[in-house]
Length: 306
Image 1 (tube, rainbow, N blue to C red):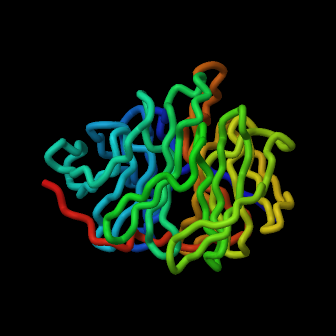
Image 2 (cartoon, one colour; image 1 turned 30 degrees about the horizontal axis):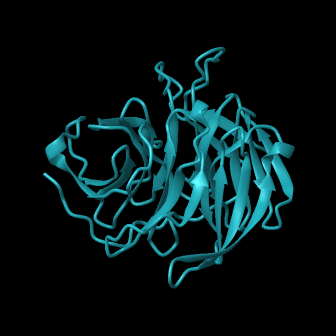
Image 3 (tube, rainbow, N blue to C red; image 1 turned 90 degrees about the vertical axis):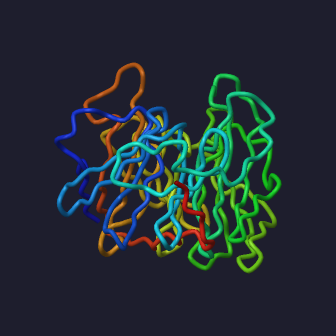
């Protein structure tokens, strides 16, 4: 099966330090993503190449939108709602904190997050200094009624890899820290938004790289960005590797399906501090003959700040 890989913004000279959390909005035919340390949200409409960006008061790591287009973001100090405007800066008065967990350590933030297919927002936390190997991170659920759950999965070092099967019977979650490198599958009760039995899905110590952000395709296969492994890996629902795509970046960070027919995998990347190449820190469009599914928006109604 043929594969094409293209830079999303080939003329962009400035790479992202930590490009993350790509999200395709079908109603806009636009891709959104973040650069975490830059505190920026970016947007590109591939059809015309128009690029927009917004700078936030603090780091934004993961996000979604509600049906009205209000942003729901996992940041350093909690979950926030914000309405994006014409200005390239979101001020303190233009966003509203909705909820925050009791962070058990300093230097924490939210990391990877996405909605389940019923519109609940799931997001995890981590200690930003990965050298501490601190396992105080946890996974939370923010439901349509605006309630933040207690920790639902705990003892995570670097939470990542959230995904949901097409039939909503399985939730996937990974820990991408070099000391962990595992992906788990959980039984999922879609009606109640409750996770059940946990099992090891993939031990990435057996494969190149670490399991960073992920996406699930229309066939139920799980795609993970192999950070430090320069590739995308596709695992069947049985946890068997059946495809491997080498990328021109050393640290792919997260992937998401998009495009008019959801047949494009958009992949963000991190620029390493040493030995970066010309492509590291950029976003790529990978066409590999596989279709994905639309991401569900947040099912609640977010307040409009500002």
